[in-house]
Amino acid sequence: MRKVLISAVMVGALSACGHMPFGAKESGSVQMQDAASVSAQASVAPRPKPAAQTPDAFDTTTQEQRAAATAKPAGGESKLGTTVASLGDPTDPGFWISTSLVSTPAKGRVEHPATGKSVQVDLIPANEGGSRLSLPAMRLLGVSLTDLPEVVVYKS
Image (cartoon, rainbow, N blue to C red; front, side, top):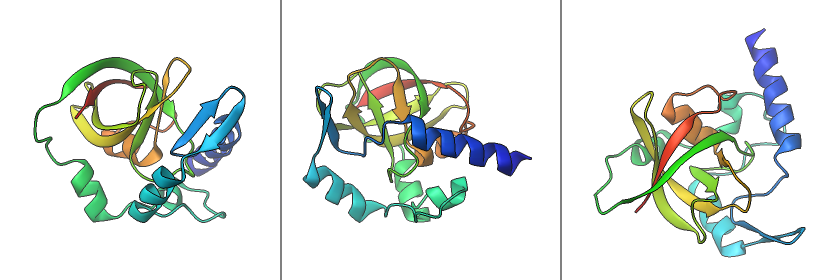
């Protein structure tokens, strides 16, 4: 039953996320791809296979990448604010958050106060309210993929 529910959520997330890949910029109603951002991200974690149906299949990050993402920050961060995050497009690899708390791409960190866990992420500007968080980042924060966790966003 749980696998069926997760699969249904993943299918819904894929169809409802607007298919805006990492590094995409919205220009009016036209989405434009930032090729440098996408190729840099792709070298970090490959896109999931088209047949992916489970969270494990969608999460293409390595153990080393997960360890690096959960490493303690070096300091020098600034708190941007708090946001409610939903699951972002699970086909977009890596650790990222798309949020209106930033106006330009940057490096940062998200923290889930309820679990005390945090993840280093790419901060991607979003034009709408709320935020979308990558599947690997949600997993490292220890939240359910169907939850709407409140996270604190920091800029490095």
